[in-house]
Length: 113
Length: 114
Image 1 (tube, rainbow over the protein chains, first blue to last red):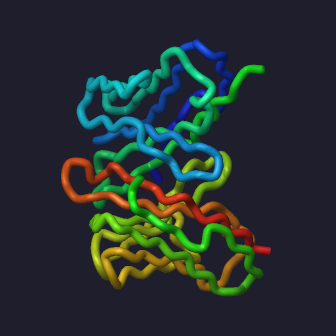
Image 2: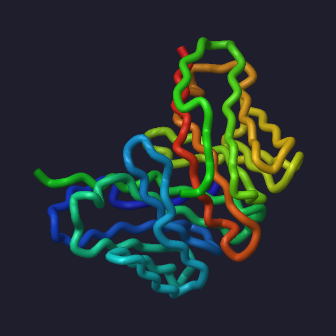
């Protein structure tokens, strides 16, 4: 099936630092979504992207739909402790129908002690 | 928060027993999904529904069946649970239209098969 490669797998953040993560695929996607999951909870939608090249912000979060339609990135600026959690990218492959999403394996954000 | 309720939230069951997980939504959304989450795999689609009595298989459907007799309820059944089905199960919903891929998730059901 379709696969999304999400990187990094995990990272440590220090308060105030900027954070970047990305997702790549070998095939074209129509839609890119970014979710965050807190422990014991379901994923929560952060940003949705629908057009190649689209750059969208949600507070300190910025995400872009890659121009090739095969990648997306998420940036978090000036990180704070509550940013820790698991971040998932998700996309709808071009040839899929029925609104099925493919998810990356996730990026775990932890606090540097 | 999207009005999605999953039940039960936690379940321990024995190998070979049938198990049914329930997802109930109050949003009247057309599409409903069942995913499983396992370390290193992200979320993988088991089955989904695009309307009452209209369902289709996802990436990891073997060993699972679903039913949707009402817009608001989507049931996931493990006919004969196996240890490989120990996982966290999430229900999600989305609405028809431009944002129809914007899935909103329930809080999950942690299933342990012993």
